[in-house]
Image (cartoon, rainbow, N blue to C red):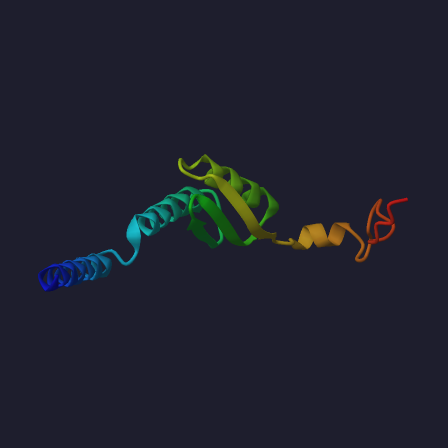
Length: 122
């Protein structure tokens, strides 16, 4: 019985040793590497389409874009990100840059056809 206990403890210790050794080598894991590669592919695809900086984050194929761009470039950035193989979804946190010409066209505070910001449901 003692011999069996010694073998069990030795096997457990060897398993823990090999597990911790393997854990030290692959801190990031295969999913982290693929996320990083996908984010880099999206960055390079978007960089050719926009003039400003765009922050790209990726988790399991879901890409998040952040930054401030003109409206036309925002659409191009979203299209370029969706076209990258491996992208499952694009979350758009890109803000539209207001140009001086566009601000001069509209009176400040004009809501257009919407009369109030409250939806009544009636």
